[in-house]
Length: 99
Image (cartoon, rainbow, N blue to C red):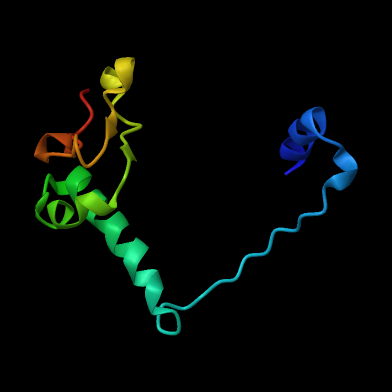
């Protein structure tokens, strides 16, 4: 939070800062909309863990961007960015590290 304030102060009048961060922990039973982002994250996880794209293919138009931070070989040219037009595939399954 301190770094953010310092960066803001370099561009703006720091006396204008009056924000307060509040976290409200919600139970999925009382807030059913939490299931939506949980499901979307789960579909992406299944692609990386199992190479299973069945659920991801169903909702991929709703996921605007996935960045594969672990695929360092594709960093050049932002080839580790996936969109609905360039979706994840079974080839994105994470393999075991080579020893």
